[in-house]
Length: 67
Image (cartoon, rainbow, N blue to C red):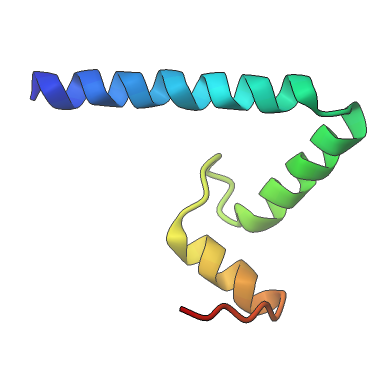
């Protein structure tokens, strides 16, 4: 259990660091566009995107994905 908590904490730190770098390297307009795109995919407004939301967005946008 402690290992899982440590791994979760490490993943969370990494995710925050990656997002911080992405935002700092982007222009204000790019951040606004990414926010709009994220909100368009996050249909349940949970603040996260799950596989069902991604699948629905891909289908809605008529994006064809092959294996």
